[in-house]
Image (cartoon, rainbow, N blue to C red; front, side, top):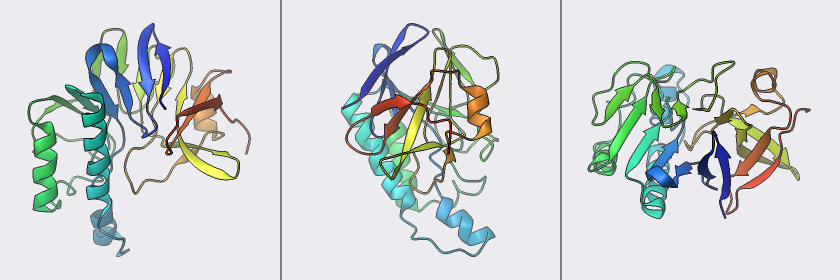
Length: 218
């Protein structure tokens, strides 16, 4: 079950996967895919992680596109784990991604990990304004009707750690969609400083997106 809500009067849906859906525009938005993270870690730190995270992330992304029928997809930045990650993708994974892009309005928002234009189909933007909403990678203090990512918010409930959306009357911060991604606790000062009192954390990662008051204490 998904969690419906409104931002700037626009009806939006937080899905259990961590993706955002805007039905009126048939738009799916995901953040922080961090494709190629295992390869980047092997190159830079020598750490060896199972190299399957790209495939798992693409599988979940394809499932969301099929479930929602999205005609527009926005990737909110840090789609690739570094500037070399795209070239390092397995040929089959790159073909899979190209197939997902084909026939859709696909928008890559620049992130801090992948700031430069990428050699892949789709449009490449610093930020996007659609209707009343602005889509960018990192939240800007004082912004209105803003959808962003970057922070990978997470919260604990009943002894379990959940990725989560953070929502208040002026902004929405998406969870990381990528498989190999850490997170920032909702009680971190950076998130407390951005989110208004009364903000919600919409927990995701299971079969239900569940809203709770945003935890502000460890």
